[in-house]
Length: 372
Image (tube, rainbow, N blue to C red; front, side):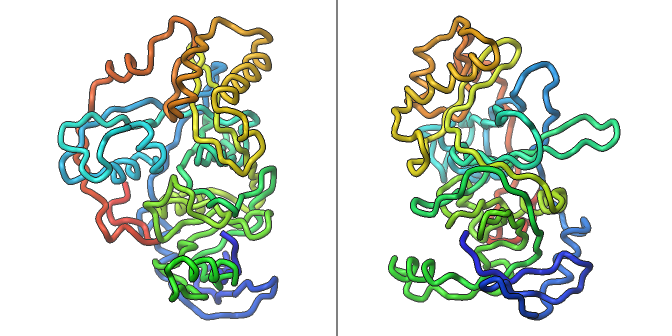
């Protein structure tokens, strides 16, 4: 999101709130100190993270596919948020299933198996096309290395997030937002004539309640007051997270953490000597998107295998074409003779999903009452 922001200082609470406007700082007022102090100290549930041990056997894949059967009160979006998935991931994995009424007993595929971004696995890596963030915290002592991964909302057409390397340069609690004039004009021209030019801190702020500032001008990683848009193209360049995921990331990531932003719609993985391919819809503003999806997928496979094996093993090229056409976010085995994705999913014993739905109260920048 392009921002002129006012943000809580990271120092001990309570603090005064500076406004960041055209690079100048002015003192604002005290707000939300108690709420944020509780949130960050653990007094409020800090959310749930999809955390996996990093593979040590040469694989670059983590997690596993689940299949669940929901009760009638849950939507597809409730299920996605519970498992730290975005709208794009849960709907792509379940074509033809109603978003609002999936139906009791319906087998819902939960695509919580991920192909990791290219090494080195350090800092934060955001794959724009995949609409997913990966955080590789430094292990402490003899702890095993892990990866934490969250779905993201990405930029709308015309507001591209820059690619490349930067760092987290500041952390802010409870931002307010002085809306840039071009964003105000855009909203007011789109049947929203009363769109405000200022949002105070709080649960209705589009910036959410926690924000990480990157070294890219006006690009933040932050929560959102419209969490059901995570997984969609919703921002003005910033990276949106579910509020509970923003809280988890905010508390874990130190200032100075390296951030790498990439755009790789096709990811190649290997696990147990079987090669996999996952696909996301190419983002048209970035280089390479003009190639056909099938050609992009084939190129990604050739590049990966050449780089890691020095040769091209026996690959099912017809499956690669199908993955490209279907834009399967679920990693699909592409080694010749490997089981098909349908065979793998059919063999999974479904789990009953009976968590309560998030409800309308979870549709703002605050953490939901039933954060796990």
